[in-house]
Length: 109
Ligand code: CUA
Image (cartoon, rainbow, N blue to C red; front, side, top):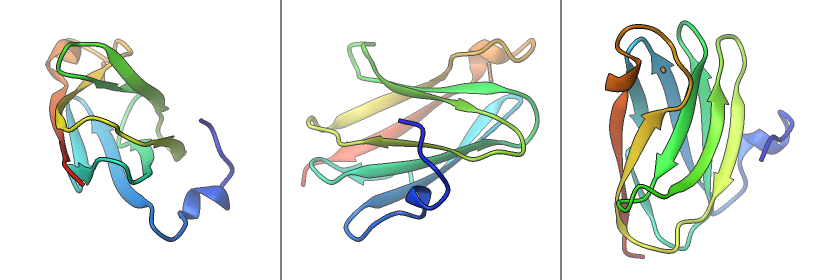
């Protein structure tokens, strides 16, 4: 899922979601996407290394990418099921690492 900067610009019809990790929270904008339309996540960090992990409601890992300072990683994923997905940090980043939890709502098309 790692792509170069040109590919990261996004193509027509993609949903672009900007993600920034901080000790200890996620900024995700927008936090709602649609089933069936490719999503381009542009992921970076405002401080240290984090791991951006998207989990289905059954806690199955759906997709992941590193959240790094000074660099934008891209991740493309098309959701096939609606629901409220959970965002967890996958790399130890300090005392409240376990509290880096957020939601991503995936709506019916
Ligand atoms: Cu951020 Cu662990």
